[in-house]
Length: 246
Image (cartoon, rainbow, N blue to C red; front, side, top):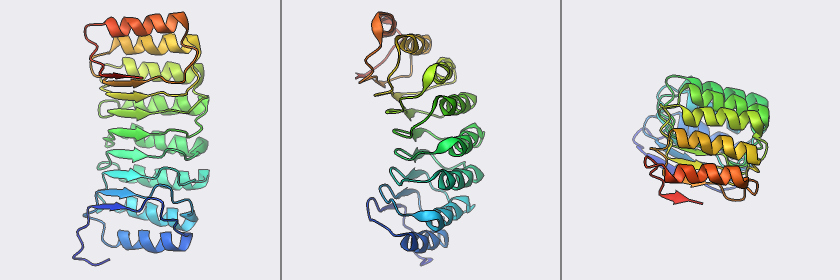
């Protein structure tokens, strides 16, 4: 709270905060928010309703210019996810990296996150949603939102979301084919694609290949002949500049 404090980066990963402690901490940050650029609260599973509400107050503060927020594995409830994503959407222009991995956002959390991604002021470059138990319906909402505002995103992590489904994969492919999409890193490890889904996805990558540098398809056992053939076409494409393939 000291007005002379100009802290830019704060890492409190796995500090086992209680809800009361979270409230004290985030309230203090909110009293002097203009210098902080990076905040890591990952693996603090007891932020609680009041802690999340207070964190959201910080994110909504117009003086808050946070660029990187890591909330990996904080075990948010759907209600907490809703509060948090609403706050992010009210002050979106500074945030560049958002990590929500391991949090089950639910329908309302995904809807609010999608509203943020569609916001023309949103310039998010890195989004990590690994292990968020995203359903096919949620995948469709999320990837459609990304496709409406695709030019800033550089890294997308959807690994361990096993229920993307046909419609989610098709919508993700629409994003990848969008000429404004400049995605450089795509992680789809352990998404359990079918052969048909693999074909749709790799064909999409082949239609807009020049920006992608890293592609992770590990633990997808159903690429099949057609998926592997389509992936091979991508790798033979002279515009493909892939540097890392898993």
